[in-house]
Image (cartoon, rainbow, N blue to C red):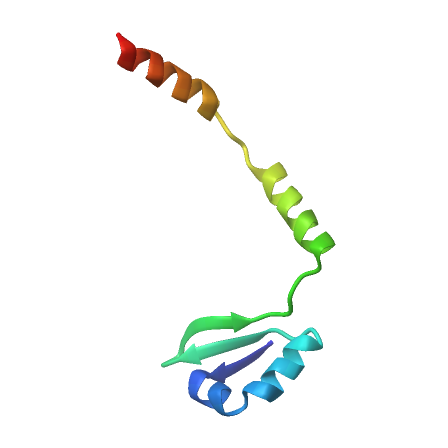
Length: 78
């Protein structure tokens, strides 16, 4: 993973984009603070797999949102 200043990145953008296209991740820093990342795009299959894994990791507790909305709407009527 390459760390490069924003100023230097502006001067070598084409080269950096070529590196990202080959799979490398580049972190842009300004005053020793990360401000952005250049990462290669994910394929649709990769994106879907990551989304499914994220959704599976969620642990929702309590009543569902639809139940809450219905309950609140009924409460407003009376």
